[in-house]
Image 1 (cartoon, rainbow, N blue to C red):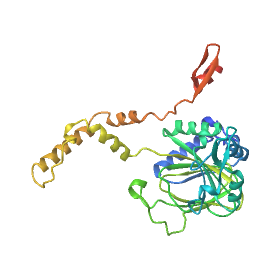
Image 2: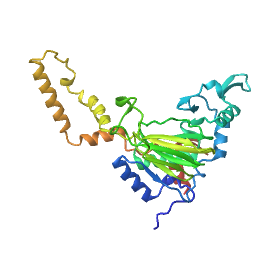
Image 3: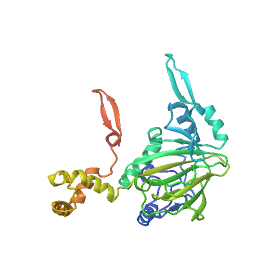
Length: 325
């Protein structure tokens, strides 16, 4: 069967072809960026300008879930929030679409976190990604216009799949400054001083894969544009050792006070710790035990209320789909 790019997104495949998934796997192993051009692919069945209007108007958004960014800094919430009274006279804080429109015209970037909780089609893509990647995935919406950059050059602590929904946006990329960086260890790294290794424009239907640590600067090109970043954090050996620290605590040798003198019994205690660690690492199926503790990556089914002749009870989306087939 020819592996063609779908013209309308199919959530079950997260809008990606089998060949594109193979390319993502290869890029992940090499920690390399990857552009997958959309050609005839469209994400309008996932999200659109009308969807954005509905989210802003009817989802009761507030800071910090919805925020405006300019030159890498968040604008004061007072510049786009408003307080109104509901039908019962209660004061409710939320966004002002009029204020957001004015700010967008000045070149800021609109950010909406956890879009998958607000829009079912985005949630379906997220679920498909989680099933394929074996990791939790979050969806963040970015909307911009004009030519001002909302975000300056930066790097993320996790991998990202960028889905260009509407309009075009220029991206400048630099390779990671260190191998497999993490925010808790490397903190703030100096900005790259060399020219970008990749400087190009994403068009609607394009998907950009950025592994952890890649410097990037998304830049609007004087037209309305919108993309969704599906971010995910792959487990590392450091995560394994954090789990191991709680696992080995069952052995009393790890709970003893450390001897500070640089002479026996300090040396004998260090030798006991070394031997205990080696025994733990030599345990059969230790890695499998860790992987079992974090789950298999299969997303939790969406719970739903089901009303029938017997009353109401909880049903999961996959069970409901099976009953209706």
